[in-house]
Image (cartoon, rainbow, N blue to C red):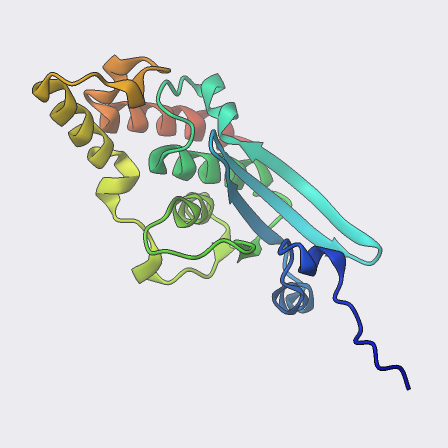
Amino acid sequence: MSLLKRMPPKRRRLGLTDYRKRLKFVKSGLPRLVVRKTNKQIIVQVVRSKLGGDETLLTVTSKKLREYGWKASLKNTPAAYLTGLLAGLLVKDKVKKAILDIGLQTPSRGSRIFAAALGFKDAGIGISLEEEILPDEDRILGKHVSGYYKTIRESGSQTIQFSKSDESVYVNLEKHFEEVKNKIIAELSGK
């Protein structure tokens, strides 16, 4: 009998995969809604587990929102919601129910991850989400971003956080959000 312990898999050692959680996802038999956030964008994927490897049914990044006229940041809560909505509408014919996979990200109430999942659910796909973890309506509409922008402008400070996009959109982000949301729904509801 060897005294050496069995070394854990490489992805576990590197902190990339929780194999216990992954096994539960695979056993559920449902496609996974995989939501990841980076420093620049939100990534939403629909992945089906298959023997021999996973099959990615769809990948949508928040950069795709630019095609629908989105002028604000690609990494904020409204952009996460719209990315989830877009992904849900695009995969609606292939998937009726999914399970949320946030990976090793720490779940926090009202985060962008759950905003994307709510958008996916609002597209008409069944996904189990608890109400207390979802962001409230004001955050999804971007009222907190508009309020912060107005505060900075009134104080006379430079708006460094908003320099890479059209700053005028932050004055009334809620209106811009609704315009883009309606455009996405109008273009994809017929598919």
